[in-house]
Image 1: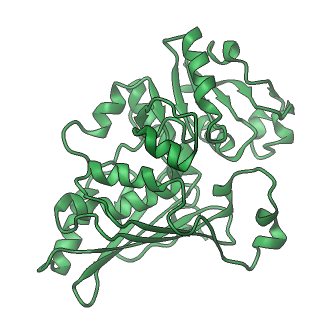
Image 2: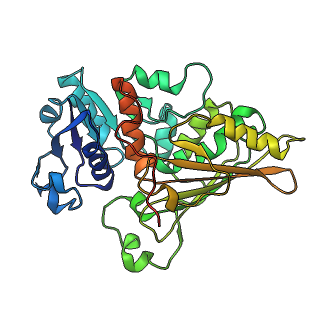
Image 3: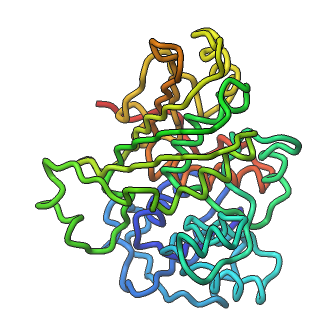
Length: 346
């Protein structure tokens, strides 16, 4: 068995990673660590009954480095220094960061959206990423350190990349509007995340091109061949716990037909175990709890633009599920192992 330690085990992302690891037949859960939370895990993650009596320990690099794999579910900017310390102790350990610290290839992008503290980029945990040259699966198969994608970035990437890859869109003038569940904001106590503020309310945030997933989206879509100018990205907190629905609009090449759009999206995800074409616009309920993303696209009535819709569970395919899928590839395990494509509905 491969032993997996989880840092940030008391948070939403870390807890979701643990839920998936409990169902994995070839991975064994090791040390459970957190920054400030202490006591039995059951007092922080009561739904993880098999781990309820396990004690949380501090983020000690020596303890974490003693595992075969370390999964880090820490706030953005908190992983870079810790991962460097772990690798200094055990260069052979595998690591998967659920935060943003190792996603961005360009230091300038990190500093513009996150500030100081850029860390070296790791293999990006999106096997379905459409790119020229070496496939993302080939990159992940050789990777020992892996960066999980951002949930919003995943939804927009899945919605936009088939059109760009097929050449019916360039990636210019993309407009993306997303409804996002509150778990995507993390577990930290903030006034605008209280139930009294969120229930019955739709709350836009990071408006005007300021959301931190923007450079990640542009990085992904440039790999697919896009020019990426004029990306408009607006997320809206919706009064649900889980789920993202991304509605993405982009101009298409003159003469593009409805069948061109359908063919581009069907062929892009043909044979994919988790990212699938949907014959109708999907909703979030059908992907809740699963590692699936559903994508539908249609040519607009005037033939000038296409509209693509992607839904996924932000904690599974948007974060922890993508991480486990990529870790499976890294370990030489079938990528579907321990992951379900079946949603929970109603």
